[in-house]
Image 1 (cartoon, rainbow over the protein chains, first blue to last red):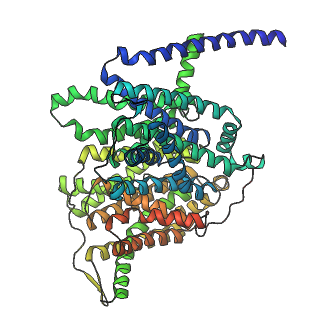
Image 2 (image 1 turned 135 degrees about the vertical axis):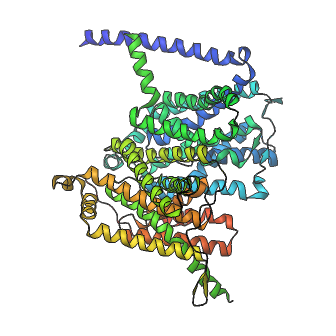
Length: 340
Length: 293
């Protein structure tokens, strides 16, 4: 037995060291990115970081605990508005508004989720759909607070009086938060809480019989996912320097849904891959279509929104049908092929 | 006019508008019964059918009646394609995975309609007369009243068909217990396909009716989301409860318009649903389910 163990351990240990090395290389690359890459790359990297945080949140709810949310965008919106309002009216710095935005989203999420967390499936989906429509309605309709369709202007975040007022400076803030969010998500899913999530996802009745307090853990998953959404929203507010309702429509919720599915439900790596794929895809599409549009002479901006919907939908359906474990699984398979 | 009279008038008009929602609800519930699939693409199927009607009757100038036939036929074909390509392979997969697939299909259809017909309003040929109908003192707009009448005829017809026809009995058998039904020689897969055909037909008719009462835009399907939100309150077990839910949405919209700015109409069904879920988490008539582990 010991012989078998040592032989099987050696490559695993080696793999672990390799993994560490690659992680350090990746980190250095991410830190160096703004110094070497053009400005719009840094912009997309920042946007990507925000999307990764929000996707990690949805993945915790949906991928691990099996709680489908169609209202993730609205919770991102709650975070964005909370950060913006706290800054505008109270002048609070980002290191207070960021967690405050997360907590606010978690609380709002609890209001919508709590009644339906007691039962399963459909009711929660409908409740999150209700959250999407009602919150968006509030963003548009509560003129005196949200300034309606026009939205709010947000001043740049600042650290010790040093303003994060361009894409490079805010990029580093986003990078730090995204890394912390990812590490925390990884730790959660490896803990007792994460195992409870998976047990609930697989069969909540069985989990309950086995002693998992299903309602409590569903609530934790829902609140945690919404918290992530809120933090992502606050970063988005500082990133764009404005907040308006148009950013938080059902289409964005579909975007996060596709990111989780495409990346691979129930995988931390998957959330990163999915968010990356989904953030870059519309840009690649647009870059690819600009020459074509020039040739035929039609207005590309008019078709981008429906085109995006078609692509998001195809990705959702395609991955669920053909590769339900997503890009993370493809990645794993490719790695196995190469390591042979 | 006294406030009470006004309230009654609004209610009657609202319930009349709810007839179409009941038709949508019927399409959703038939699929749910046959395969426990909650079809989030219902609104988009309905909207697509209305565009088919527009294309056939206006673009290809076939006239309203032939146009309606073409729209029905193409809607059924689309329904069958969706079932065959995307739903059938998901058999045995988790419930939420199938829901997500229908949601994805909805996004695809919305996008395609946006690409083909653009975001602007279109006017479909008038198939409903505008002369208002008077119920005693109550004035009901002509198109709403006629749409209600058509919806009622079709709903009643379909319910009778599902009750007495061979296919309808097979569908109910499959709904009660798919495995037993299968062992009794009922082709459950065909029943599921059949349920998508029924949904496509109800979707097509409700889409055309909605588009002729209002106008045709890519947002036409959004009302089906409202229907989805409210019919779960009925517990999804009885067709009757689901039809009532459809009428309630229409009534709610009208009465909301009476007291609040019209923009509130978009969210009142959701608020109602949340409140009911808060008080009765299993829906209004839903029984607690007992399950074997």
